[in-house]
Image 1 (cartoon, one colour):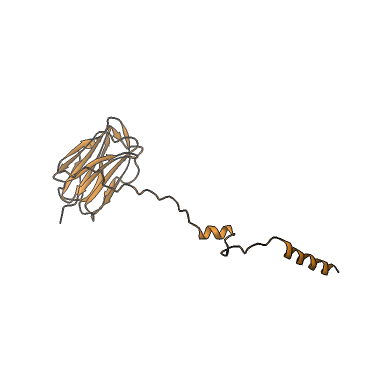
Image 2: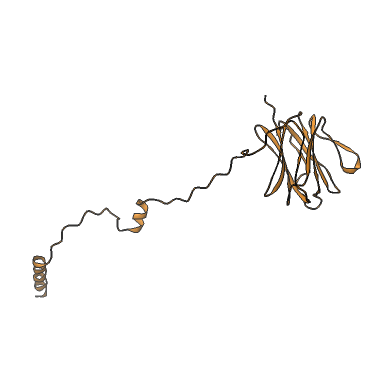
Length: 200
């Protein structure tokens, strides 16, 4: 009885109720948020701006001595060397500023050692003396004070020759007299000496 009544009500609703047109076709998963995000546009992370290519505003190489720096006192932190295709590099890093400095070429890789009057000979056939005034590394310097790289084309050895009474000096033993590019950088403070590899 109840089943017959229910069937009768369904037939009346179908006959008298509002008619609905078939809906438009819906692609599978269109109502699934996860499916929508998978098929919709993907938002990627913003691109990272590439760093400024090295050498953009560097001075030209010059076959002359160089000097510069700022008035003030600083502590030497470390020294590094590096090799590139067209130059070898010496870097002396400080904790605040690059104080007054001079970079002088010399015909032999022989350098005085502080106030002792003794000399030291480095690898190579010519030399460059890097002197910094109003600086010390007595309690702050870390790393090697004698860096030997005889496989480099120009820079064969870099050695600290003085840290005495506010003067820090490094001798650079080089394979032959070359032109230099001397400049400073900030954050951190660095004195950089690039030694040009002669054209072969």
